[in-house]
Length: 214
Ligand code: AMP
Image 1: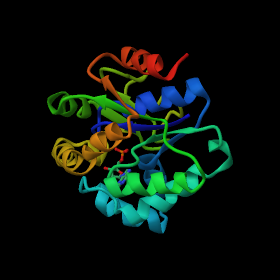
Image 2 (image 1 turned 45 degrees about the horizontal axis):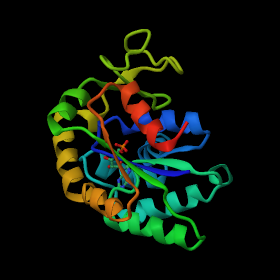
Image 3 (image 1 turned 120 degrees about the horizontal axis):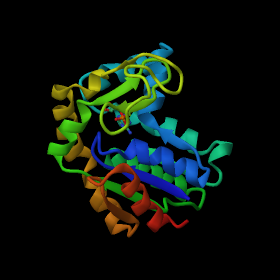
Image 4 (image 1 turned 180 degrees about the vertical axis):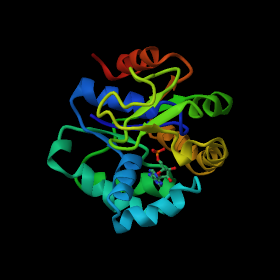
């Protein structure tokens, strides 16, 4: 099962991707997490990516594509995977399709978690991320047991720079311009699944499971 998650930043696709990965025992591959891990470890890739991420811009395609093609070729991805945050541009989608076609494979589902911009801006200001493990929470929708402390590792929770309101508006603009065209791209390939992302998280998940199967 090879799944792509589509949706604006803050639509909840990361949360759903994690639940899908768990239910179907496939890896959750988040390019945002990969970049953040690289930033934390001070790698060259992390340094390059950070300059774009901090401004709410996309990291250039050439820094993303090889990384993902390499990751989906690893052993644990043999039975499928859920890609979260990739592809984000048509060239990235084409590069993935070409890499898969070369090994006689293809994406099975592109799940679009649909949420209007107004809801997104409200949601993102409540998002909190752990500085240690990168886990994400929401002060209203997915609170931690103890305020400001990560449930998973006890790390400190912060509002990520790229979740600040001015950056969120910029990211939404980038999303509409560069990522939204992918909805049409996957619709034409007849693998697009539209899900109403304004419902609560478990209803969104139930709607996804209905499509993917129990
Ligand atoms: P995310 O956690 O998926 O919202 O990603 C955070 C940031 O990482 C984005 O705003 C981009 O700057 C960068 N990023 C993540 N995935 C990609 C991608 N596929 N292409 C370009 N930039 C990306």
